[in-house]
Image (cartoon, rainbow, N blue to C red; front, side, top):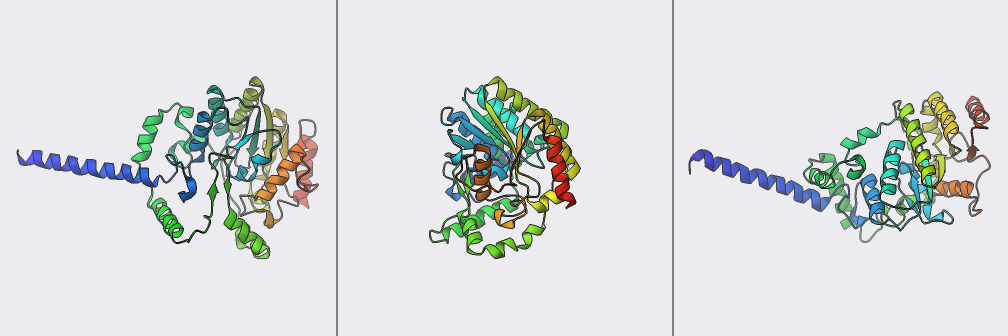
Amino acid sequence: MDTHKKWFIVSLILTCSVVLCIGGLNYLADPYGIFRHDFSYQFIEPNKNFIKTRHIKRNPEKYDCLLFGSSRANNIDVRKVPGAVCYNMNYSEGVPRNHLENLRYILGKGVKIKTVILALDEFSYKIDAREHLSQPLRHPYPPVVKENTFSYYLKYLFSMFKGSIWKEVASGYKNRMGSQGERPLIEYDMFGSGMAFFPVIEKAVEDNPRAHINDVRFDAPYRSRGDNLKEALNDIKDIVRTAKENGIRLIILINPIHKTTYLASDIPQLMDFKKQLGWIHDYYDFSGLNSVTTNNYYYFETSHYRMAVGDMMIGRIFKTGQTRVPDDFGSFVTADNIDGHLSGLKKQLAR
């Protein structure tokens, strides 16, 4: 065998070995949880969009209610929705296009849904869902976007993930191994309610609420920029149409936006979104400056509210009477009262 052939064979063997090592490492560590069945050792946020849509497809008779939203909607405890077996479909940066595509796919698989709850944010009309196709944290379940599932699994297995991802994974394993049985920071109920729980963080807040309320993190707004308003409204119209065609009760709400983020957002753009949304469908507006959104106690930071807030939202929408809901928290908005509602929000800002 000549020298060139020897080098070719050696190079081929080395290349295959490296590729197989990458695939094996990605499968074992599974940073975004795509192959995982036990999430007790999930140390970075998993791709909930992918995992949850696949879970519903595989369990078509388990739930009759779905809550769609961004990660903020995680803390709406769907187990407390009366008269329903509800699953929380929240995922990172979930926007109307994601929800529309997932809902259509799920219904196309024969899943019978009676109620859909759609939770919206001040970035719902800013982020373009097509950006998620290049993000392993947010990539949708492949058949939703007409992509072959097997080819996506291969792409995932042989991806070169960022070094920072591996640092987080390694740090998570190290901390968990040395925790002597302590509870993890995040507990995922991926195949039950779809929710994530934060027992350690919640306990820290309750142990020292004053320090939490005065934390400097509440001075830093969550910022998102962009203008995808027309497309987002069209997607919401399609969600409304899809719900009507399938006899689904649709409940729409706007999440309670922390005051720091709310005041740093493009208020005219947000008001325009709320006005046009009111022409499309009735909704509950939990945003604005009220006794919840102006109280740091009810938030982890300036983006995500705590579960106590989600309980208030359920109490307002379903009138359960199980949680005390402040009078100024949650307005029911229709096409008839939208102008008065927006006028009240503008007066809040003026004050």
